[in-house]
Length: 60
Image (cartoon, rainbow, N blue to C red; front, side):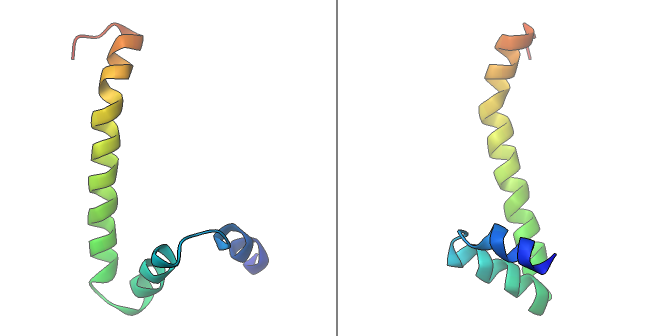
């Protein structure tokens, strides 16, 4: 299992790995990462909303 995890992270940017490490060692880091991920998901949802509307024919 560890080999699979290591292989999946081999091409990750160092900054991403540093965030993952800090989530394990610093109490507030996981909260900050979760907030950042929520903002990222909201941005993606906002970008996809017009596409989904055009596919479904929904007005909003």
